[in-house]
Image 1 (spheres, rainbow, N blue to C red):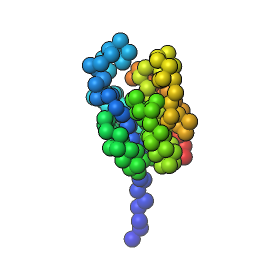
Image 2 (cartoon, rainbow, N blue to C red):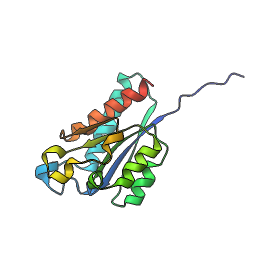
Image 3 (spheres, rainbow, N blue to C red):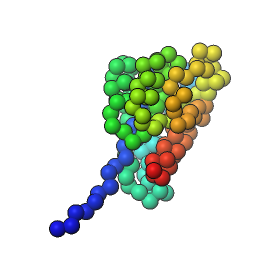
Length: 158
């Protein structure tokens, strides 16, 4: 009997932090009408298109949002091949999240809807950026789409 080797799915976690559940309701002038649901729908569609592009079906996405930092930390500790994160305000305040991301050694890309460099001075500092594969911000939904493309490209060529 021959064993058929099945390809293990590479799971990319998409972690959304504090207050991102309010997308589409708060500060429309900064975040637009984008919602978590619209981000998820778009990324799932992009996943299918990119899977065709890369000629693979070995990727899946797992979405998560929490306003509770302990829950967020637990999600980051799950087994992922890669992460796309937007920690929200925790980006600028949480050493715990930065330490967790560094400790897990999972490649991650930080994505932000708004241009954090053009906002209040306290938002210019990201505790999570130093160990990220990259940081993409200011492009709205396209920040997430670019992060997904780059993460899939890097995981596919591994």
